[in-house]
Image 1 (cartoon, rainbow, N blue to C red):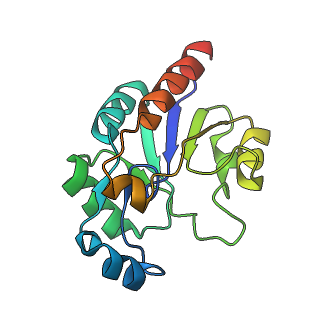
Image 2: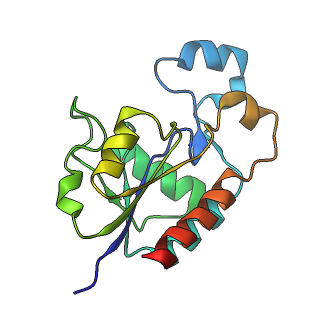
Length: 163
């Protein structure tokens, strides 16, 4: 049996930006467009479509509650073919339970440095970690050009082709 190819994917700051609860009041006052209006990152739809062809399974690993995550993925990208990492929320961190993927080819996409403890834990387990620059309010509202997801896609293709 060959190893499954699994993409573990963060949402906020990777695929889109929205006014999260801790900043909502401030950000909505400053940028009214953010009220109930998440802004997708450039190339996110293409990224998801390509990853859907590359990976056997895509799993969301996010602080966004599952019902809202599913609604956002459907509304923003028309994408519903994914699982949800229910073990997240554990105070031990995002990589909690990643041992279950031993033998699989797991790639974790996050808007954090690969030097952070979670990334190191993921890599210690033999998985891959791809960091993308955080997609924040200013970049989204100013309509900045951004090719982070296209770069991540090329990294992913390289990782998958080597293994």
